[in-house]
Figure 1 (spheres, helix red, strand yellow):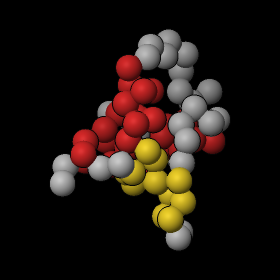
Figure 2 (figure 1 turned 90 degrees about the horizontal axis):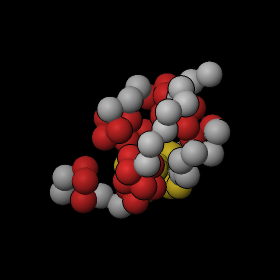
Figure 3 (figure 1 turned 90 degrees about the vertical axis):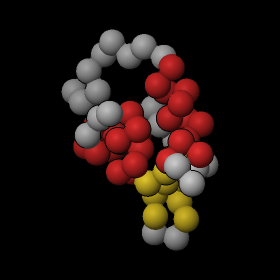
Length: 64
């Protein structure tokens, strides 16, 4: 199964999919621009939310 077929992605995979750093992804999660799901100790990001985020323009800097 490819990353684009998964329902939930790891932080590393999500950052790669958006072509941003993990730190930038963590900022998006902390500022609630991206939702997360927890399974055990794992923090996962829904692929649907990543696709939705990627379809929109975001002219503001990710990390302030």
